[in-house]
Length: 225
View (cartoon, rainbow, N blue to C red):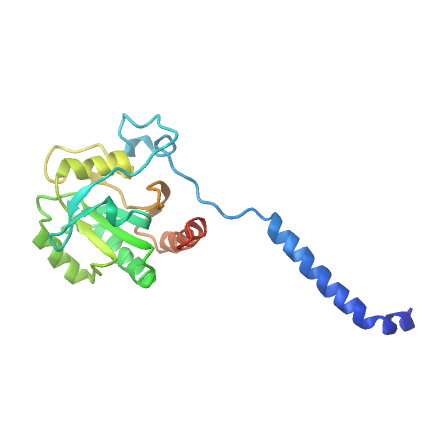
């Protein structure tokens, strides 16, 4: 046996190496590719979904919009068409969760600074207070990169509709005043087809780490040309 091994030693080593590679390739081929769910209104907490959509189980998309950014420029869905975007709802005078959310959105801006496929949107839920000038001041304070991240203001009904009927992140409570939109801490991951692919707690570092990982998964599904 020893003589046999010595005679065919090189062959056996090569055979073992090739077999290992083949088995590894088969294992990789049989592993399911990671895939993010496509969220529909019926899958989301009904408190965050407009009553007209709570039964919807397919074909949900982020609606078209047209709002002004921190530079006074009009921004529409064209800015995120064929892009992956991350959105949240905030207001500049928020003393609680918004500063943390903004800091985490800034970290995402840095993480994807060199990736033009990724864009960020922050919608103000108090547009009467958050004028273009106020957003610009806030953007300068928070280090917003105008090419990567738009802070948006405009018609309150349009923003409210986006929160409730598109991004599914706002509770339908309030007294009709300037702060009546009770938004959540959620960041929303949206694919190039304007479908929701994930919700993340915008105040938690662990959730931001998961969001970055999920963006990478989504980029495998939508590779850049």
